[in-house]
Image (tube, rainbow, N blue to C red; front, side, top):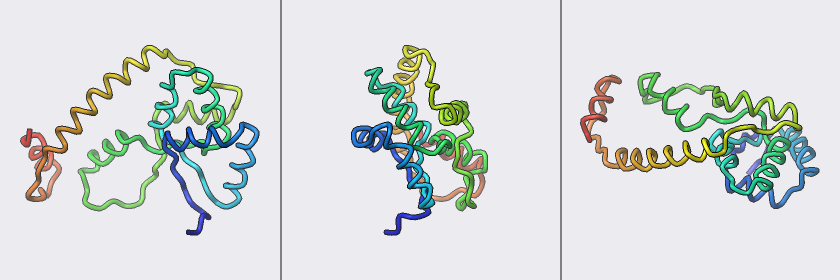
Length: 169
């Protein structure tokens, strides 16, 4: 495979792996090498969130510092951003190429942190942990709901699709 001019997404376990393989001093040259090859290494807002809930504070800060140096300053859409955008477009069967960069508040903070490597996230850790637990509970329920849906026909309009989705529960 030709590894030039690629946008490459790193999920949390890949970031953890790299954080054990590279030093903070390795990161800028690795990023520069990838940039020369036309590659961009991406994180998503979900990956950043998962790093933020790391319980070991030193490990979390080490991973964040490495990530600021190593990854592209734009985050990829979160699944919720993708889903909401798709629904707002009326659930089209085909979509044209779209901008895949997050527009979230987290994106603005990440951009700032990538510009100033001396900055880090300041947030209420307990509040984030509580929100994460609630989201996990909701996510498990959504997974169960979505897996029960059986669609025999393809409604032509958004309202019909939404009705079919809601009535299947």
